[in-house]
Length: 75
Figure 1 (cartoon, rainbow, N blue to C red):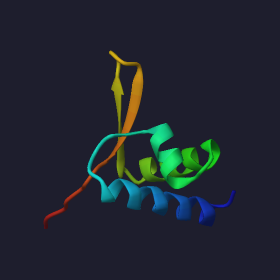
Figure 2 (tube, rainbow, N blue to C red):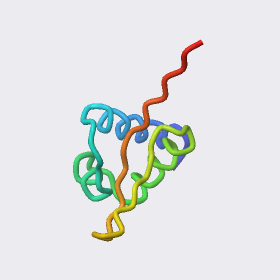
Figure 3 (tube, rainbow, N blue to C red):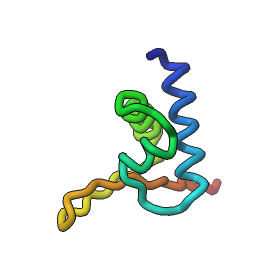
């Protein structure tokens, strides 16, 4: 998978997260986007590298969540 494809997949994930302000499970994103595990992992890695997503761990239920980070720069 080349960078162009990963960037496109990251855009799909970004639009999904941006459209619904909530925490998402990996499997929910996989289902909503139709991406396989490898494609989704690469897309999330892209967004994480750009500091656009955050990961939360629910230790009580043993689940990890992904949510959007909105960075606002004033200046």
